[in-house]
Length: 282
Length: 292
Image 1 (cartoon, rainbow over the protein chains, first blue to last red):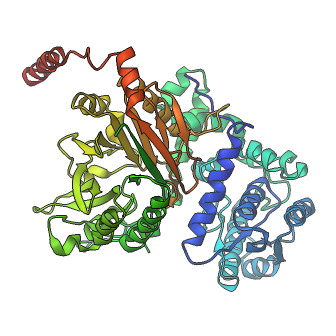
Image 2 (spheres, rainbow over the protein chains, first blue to last red):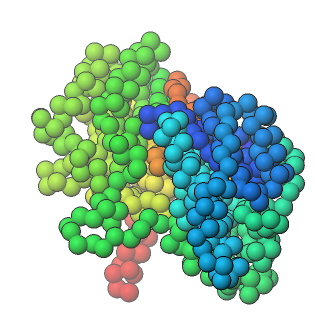
Image 3 (cartoon, rainbow over the protein chains, first blue to last red):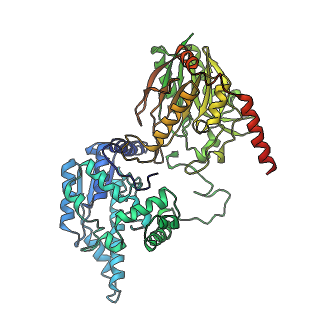
């Protein structure tokens, strides 16, 4: 039995593409709108989500928000504009520097640098979420999520920030698979080629921060999650024990980010505990 | 009659909206008349949608209760007016307020058969046993001279189900389902879930020398997509026709008992089936389980 993470190739791409596009169309239309809005960073994930949405709903029904901060890379903004041009979709540029700097100007200077870096990063992610939801109302559009399965599992995202959305077409697709998907979707080369980065501060790199490559992590997570192999079984297959355990710990530790807030049960029927309906219920 | 034309209706039910789904059924049924078909088959829970959760409670119908069954009246009427049989899926409620994942066959304005799903998947993404009581049999009934049995989705995954249906005399096995799309496979133009189904249905058709008609739904419920790909397998185990994956639509197929006749003569597996041996072995298995 083949145990490696399956690749998206020329054989399975057509049905994967159709499935993801139909998912967007079906789930958006049943809410009574036909439009989505998404944050376009210039990275591969939001580009892929954008290509899918444009194919599903038509270019006139997709709006991209470009939300740079003063330290955001120029190349990212350029790449985001390439996507916009290529697809011919509407876009808005909203610089978030004022909001972020305004808030942190009240902060005392003795905060450790590493702490403030993370806090500014989280604040930026949430500021972008806040703008997206404002535009959701303004444009009568649903917010399209752009987090992939790797970062959702590792908890490598900001809760109520970039992890927030109404629907997400790529949340069950590992980062390694996203690259292949992007290639088949004909996402611009410069976006596919650059190293993954949240771009929350200059020279940030996902893989340097995580301490492992997505390729290695995805292979392990595929066995852990999709195949339900126990960590020790994965180690017995020749994977590095420390790495397997580290990844497993990260997944467990970030579970809270993937769930709605817990509610103290006190009544006979409690939201999401024994009051159980689909979101599509309405 | 040695052949019958059947319309497979690959629909996308609106979850929890009986009225809208009935309208859609009637629309398809009325168009089917022009196609010269005498049976229309809809997917599992076609009148209600699949992941109903607590709305099972709101949408159950007791078909023996006049007031309850009134909502289905337009379907009964259509079957009578158009002289057509219809197989559709719904939530059944019995006198004791148990709920079932059921399929009914309406012919000439009357319900001629109800199949209550026996094997209720309750693992992974499925939670059917939380809401439904399992059915207790695989019945065989007659549609225009064709002996038919319904297996609902997971029922077909238990090979004993088709074994029972065939040995009870079924010539056609109708598998209605709501099978979620899942599993990326390298080098394959379909998902692994679809592949499993096609292999299974081919095996049932070939080794039980019967027609197998698969009607699977499409559409999405909270992100879960249903794969479609409704199709017909002949008693040689070959897929004769198939609908597109993920697309709504209908497809006309024909079954011909003369073909079944040839296949059952050439390879008389059903004739040679040793039911006594099976019974003896099963009794042995059950006795062992009881004493261990």
